[in-house]
Length: 115
Image 1 (cartoon, rainbow, N blue to C red):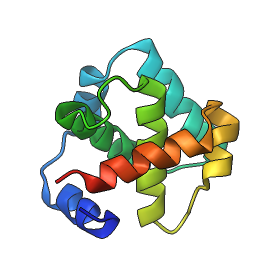
Image 2 (cartoon, rainbow, N blue to C red):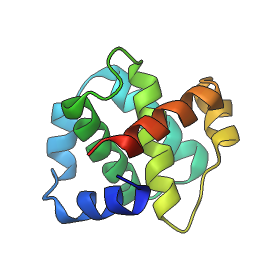
Image 3 (cartoon, rainbow, N blue to C red):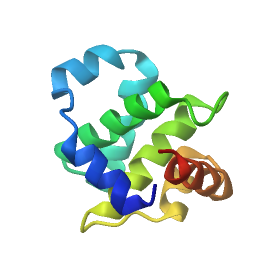
Image 4 (cartoon, one colour):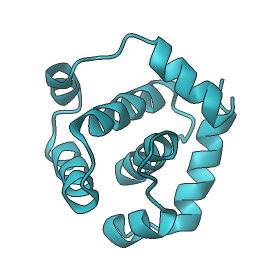
């Protein structure tokens, strides 16, 4: 599935509203990493919700097996940012998350390969 198909899939799926996303991903790690991304990059709340929804979907599909929660959050944010007007680079995400951009890119490509 390419990025465009992935986004179309995400857009056609009925996703969880913000309070429900927060409840499902409600732990300190989630609140901290997505809040940090939002503050650092000035991301709209709707993009953060989309990234959290993608995060949940990726956890359901489990394409990464044993990858870090933070890595999945970084991949989710990167994927959502690539579909909007405000692109966030791998370098920017690496700087904030301290996850190597090669790892983010590798998992991003895995995400694109899932159906």
